[in-house]
Image (tube, rainbow, N blue to C red; front, side, top):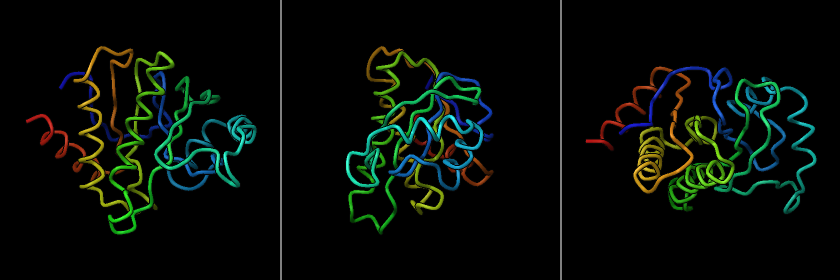
Amino acid sequence: MTGIEVLKCDITQLKCDAIVNAANKRLLGGGGVDGAIHRSAGPELLEYCRNIPEIEEGVRCQVGKALITPGFGLPATHIIHTVGPVWRGGGFREAELLSDCYSNSLSVAEENGIVSIAFPAISCGVYGFPADYACSIATREVCEFMDRKPSSVKSILLIAYDEKLYETLKKQMNAETD
């Protein structure tokens, strides 16, 4: 599969057109990759997100949806924020919603002429999604996207924050491309 790579690195240090933020519904920062992105982007990101209208009380972006902001202090030009599902055992459409995170983020990327995009392992941290399952969804979605049609997106990076997640992503990518 050309155009897709798995890396173990700090997503906030990548110079690409867009990085994806595994955000919360409020879009005002949090823990994990969300907090790291907000810290690295600087206070302008928080101010920008505060000005995004709430679609319901406390919600600026629904689970599975995606929206784009400038990258501010990041090496990446843009941030595509998506809200992953919290794992609640698998019976609450978690897999479908996680798939939506990837497909909607890629749609936003296309709409904005993004060429290179980097994804963290959405929902694999505090949201508790089982890593093998989440990584299989991630690799399936990005591979299907790259196979589907010509797009502005030419490079997709799947980013792991530790060795275990890196190995899981590599294993799932190999299974997807066999």
